[in-house]
Length: 240
Image 1 (cartoon, rainbow, N blue to C red):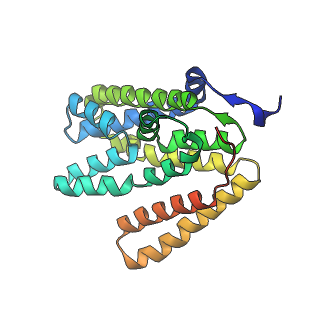
Image 2 (cartoon, rainbow, N blue to C red):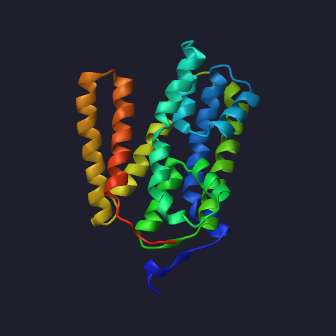
Image 3 (spheres, helix red, strand yellow):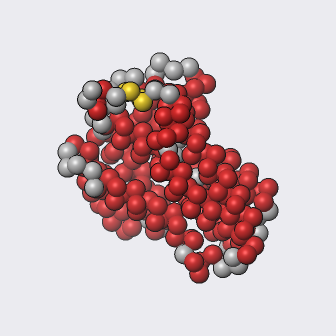
């Protein structure tokens, strides 16, 4: 059987595909929990943030803004802008799940992250037939791992008074760098050409926006432009 015909079908196979992401989430989620504890969050607050926000970048931003005493409205607006890319990610995979129920699609979109999106789109670009059950397994496994890792970080954070000393505040950046390097190492076919287009769009837009806005807004704008270019240049792989 050719690899392109292999079907990613059940929930258990989704969990298996999530194992590398789960291992990464244990580290980055632990770091987030430690940083949250460092800015004065209680264990319950850390739990609620990991469950309701469920975004590494968003949670680190929340901690940074709390540390400088930023107003609540500023925190909400900043996190919203940073995570607006999830709209584009969900939009790009919508055609593969059109036959699903509304409730199922809400679940898929709600728990979709950068990492699970990477696993999902890689499977689609390889020509695999992906089902909603498999994707739910992928998403739920990552979600539960993230919550557990945050709790562990919150529990042990009291013993790490200075997270920056151990580079824990850099954990999220390191994880995204690893994901990017993984994409670069893939075979030099359509997928890599698309990655280079996205990278070029991000670099150019970042250079332009840095002259027109603040650094924070430039990064957010370049991220959204990169997601948009990725969505527009993605070629349809296989219909579910």
